[in-house]
Amino acid sequence: MPKILLVEDNEMNRDMLSRRLERKGFEVMIAVDGRQGVEMAKADRYDLILMDMSLPEIDGWEATRQLRAESETQKVPIIALTAHAMAGDRERALEAGCDDYDTKPIELPRLLSKMESLLGAEG
Amino acid sequence: MNAPDRGDAPLSPEAVSELRHELRTPVNHIVGYTEMLLEDAPDGDQAGKAALEQTLVASCGR
Image (tube, rainbow over all chains, first blue to last red):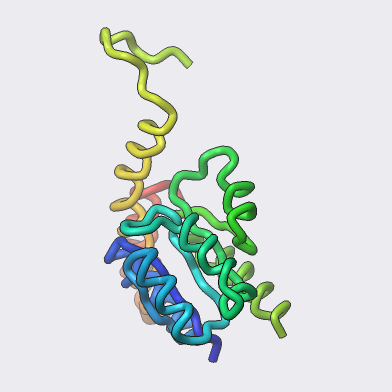
């Protein structure tokens, strides 16, 4: 069962996405801000991280940079999630070290296909 | 795009994006939970499914 770390500050988004992913057969662990996300990612091994970018404490951009700077979390696939869909967000996310990018509202089939392609690539 | 002139400075793109986010978030919750209810709805419950589909349409045109 793939183990996912979901870093999301909004309680309802967190509840909804974690339950929907669990139904699809993922094990989902939750962090509520960027700092906790980085700590959890360093402390345990995850197959993939879903990173909201607008987060308290440290935001998703900075959290991603920190994870990429550490050898143990350098290679874990990260998908950035943003609600804004601002021009340039995708480029910014990839520049920060994310492997892919998706926008809210989450369309589950679209997100799942991105997750599956990264999980497959990891082997 | 011509914003109506209310004597205010025009909203910055960041402010528009923030406002959009604030407005979209609760709608996204309605949509997501409704989709979960639809996944759970028994096949026989066509009326229930239709009502949930209607909620999705009303929420965001999906």
